[in-house]
Length: 187
Ligand SMILES: CC(C)(COP(=O)(O)OP(=O)(O)OC[C@H]1O[C@@H](n2cnc3c(N)ncnc32)[C@H](O)[C@@H]1OP(=O)(O)O)[C@@H](O)C(=O)NCCC(=O)NCCS
Image (cartoon, rainbow, N blue to C red; front, side, top):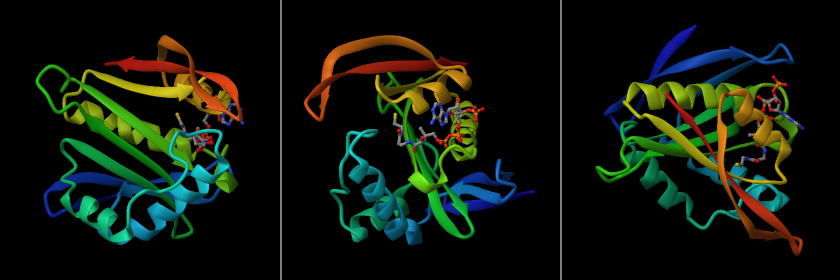
């Protein structure tokens, strides 16, 4: 079943309903300004785990986040959320380069709530982001992941991403050196 959601009055991208491994249904849609609080809460939950993403807490106010979401037009970038039982349980932010030299490349970041991992949200979010990237003419989707993040690397490989390079000791997690892994998918 498909619908349409509108962001900032301009951008349009379909809302999709998907069936999860648990049998429940999830809804993927573009984020809207009223999602600012839920998005910020989820960023803080995942950040507090300290193992998977660089950002350990939200550094913006809810008002800032509302303004960011109001300004989004879904063309240069897209912020997808996935809801389960009406609550946001996953996020994905994808945006293309701002300059003529890198506008063919989009980068992305994503997170799911720890209690809702391994049931298909990440796969669905990433599929949606790849559809968006194709729809705006992006040629390459690129991302950076900690070498210790087995689940994320496995998801990206499953979706066709290939490793392009590593930076050694680029992060320290609990004082242990962790590599930055750059992965990309070309269309
Ligand atoms: C990475 C993340 C977004 C994946 O989302 P998810 O909803 O758990 O992913 P899915 O349930 O769709 O699983 C997708 C694939 O990931 C892999 N995967 C999922 N959990 C895994 C685990 N615990 N160990 C190894 N691989 C795993 C599998 O290949 C799986 O595919 P399959 O179900 O066909 O076997 C999620 O684990 C997460 O939010 N992690 C914390 C934040 C983070 O790491 N963000 C990415 C930073 S680069």
